[in-house]
Image (cartoon, rainbow, N blue to C red; front, side):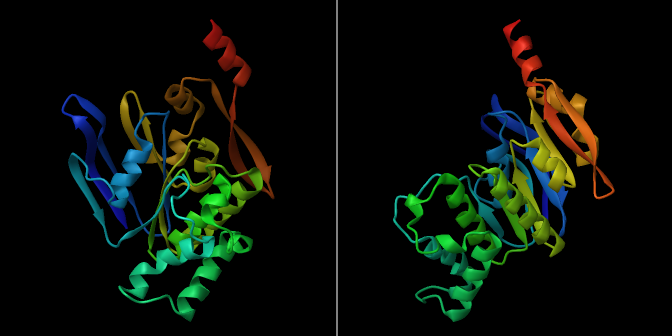
Length: 253
């Protein structure tokens, strides 16, 4: 379980990135953080994962968090399989090498992420999307009940976006707690129970169904956005449509 209470981060008392962010991520649920560029999404999830110390407020975790950063390559030419095995560091211990159980866990994680065929490739030679799949597998194999992801669909084509979203829903069904930042409101609508909207007027948190609306998203991003209902095997769902032509006309005027 993850809980943030009144969390703020800033580079000075006059230069706050965000303030007063409070939410809980219980087991078996997902919370998505959305907002325009520069709103502090990555900073917030890094605070939640314990990689940054907030300037104010409290972050409470019942266990260490598995963390998936945005893929930015690597200075070391490790094989993809070895990158995943690094996620077993806590289980392996200091001055020991991974055993058969660790390798089996890494193979299973890579299979779940759809990355089995990448095992012998050098990590820097992979595409950005392929690197993202390896980083997700590395976080899964760590075995943490809490997974924090910074834009997990970065660099992924449509097929692999579906693969990753399906995998995250499976992890939720297994009881894992998920916190993710995303530039894709549609992904948040599909996956998240609750959302955090970071904008010019501060942070807002609440149920995804209440905050991922035409009015809220249009105000958050400054472009016209609509939500559209459709039927999927008899289940009513919603998806999000951006009015690109209207946005261009508005910007030009």
